[in-house]
Amino acid sequence: MATFTIKQNIPTRTGFSKGLKQVAQHYPQVVGIGSDITHSVGMDAIAHYFPERFISLGIAEQNAITFAAGLSLTGKIPFVASYATFIVMRALDQLRVSVCYNNLPVKIGGAHAGISVGPDGATHQALEDIAALRALPNITILSPADATQTVKAVWAAVEQTSGPVYIRYGREAMPDFTDENAEFIIGKSQIITEGNHCVIYATGHLVWEAIEAYQILKKEQIYCTVVNIYSIKPIDINTIIQTATTCGCAVTAEEHQIMGGMGSAVLEVLATHKPIPVEMVGMNNCFGESGAPRELMHKYKMDRNAIVEAVKKVLKRK
Amino acid sequence: MEKLLYLQEIAYHIRRDIIEMLAEAGSGHLGGSLGLVDVFTSLYFSEMKHDAQNPMWEERDRLILSIGHVAPVLYATLARAGYFDVNELKTLRKLNSRLQGHPGKDKGLPGIEISSGSLGQGLSISAGIAMGLKINKSSSRVFCICGDGELQEGSIWEAAMAAGHYHLDNLICIVDRNGLQIDGKTSDVMEIEPLSLKWDSFGWHVTVINGNDINQILHTFTKINSVLLKPKVIIAQTSMGKGVPSIENDYRWHGKAPSKTEAEQFLKELEHGYFHY
Image 1 (cartoon, rainbow over the protein chains, first blue to last red):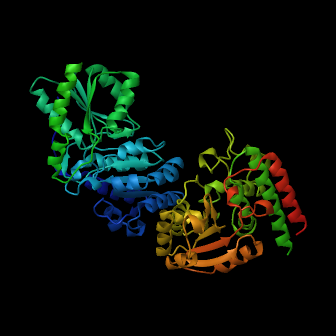
Image 2: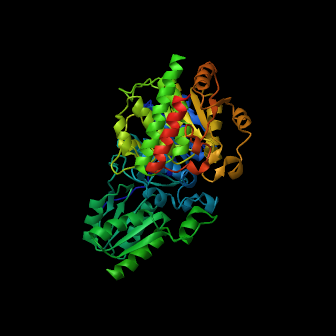
């Protein structure tokens, strides 16, 4: 059985920043758009190292997205990053019409995703961004599990598609555990543990929580397959069908509303290809509040305990 | 003078095309499309650097139609400028047509820079292009066509602020100031005046002109080309429905297409105006 080593605890936004610096170094057409919170969302990688390719647009998300669409029409690959909730929800029509309808290579960084943003409270906790974006044609939605994968997500956004990409990442330091050499391919997923009692489809921060849940359940002789759904759109249909067939029941886990999120995307696949009992871990149709990240993940049932509970529940329905 | 007569003749044909294509389509925006004909004629047949045989020519000036609903004037102008066959205008708004109700880049119609139709976005796109062109050290310009009612969208002013901040003097915004929008007069629906002061305070060079006077339009283009370090706005006062006296300045013709009978009458009015100029 595989082992999982935490290399260090770092935020996925650090991975975004690192990836951005690398692609900017490699591709002169990469430009960065600033929305005032440059450092906080990892855009300082361009502002600091490539100031001539950094364009500050102030606190104006609608203009940031559409301005980026314009830049991309002149051969640039613009990265726009802001807090996920604002860059997606405030500028949703701009994303829909100017970016997605025109299928332009605008790369969007959604920072501070999930409830783990913590003390800032409900206004700043992006828990609806995946649902909003999933319905838009042409866009790719990536939700890397840790900082190492976030670096790869930035590369993938530039090299694996000529269309729009949304990369979702968080603020809190979280375990960095994925293999540096593992592949990261848009439309694929990553099987992290194997077991045939239940499959856990997890994304973002909750991938590590799923691994922790796997360890807890193992002690009770319950063996789970953990699948890291880092590419939410397109989603890895084949792996989902295959693991669902092996396990016969599933749990989905994400730091996002249950309605319309990654879990819903998995359900769309299962309902049409391999209907099995499923339990869903995520935000249950409510807004968050202030608190410490781990306290919030516990209170709103988006942590290892919630996943363990969900696995036990779904096993009874198998 | 000869040039003016030539442009007026083209404008006449574009107006004919618009009336005919809208009657054929059975829906669409007649008033605004007719009002902008003189601006479009001046742009595509005089001012803009472009090549119908090579629509994606790198050095071309770009035209971004922020008010996608006046697509008929863009389509008719592009057809008359040789981008595609004039007969294709008849397919406007029909299934499988390249002439979507609002410009759709995915349908592959030559000369369409970007899909547009959700108001308030074109100026941001234009500013982004203008910035990209500057980074690329290109001398191309961007012409952005906005509506006056559209200026009620907050995102327009985000774009205006950014263009002023970055001194995008390769960006020219033309505001179709016909004073009307779907619900009535802009001054009743939501006042946008003092318009010149607004643009000026955002760092733009402002010119107010008669947007149905080709001579004045051309003269203005020449004049503003020498203005440096500022984006430029031309507030073009136009008449909605220009060329067809019976519907001129009637806001009810903002989003309406003529019936076949109405179209015949409008064409007669248009001919009368043109040949008795």
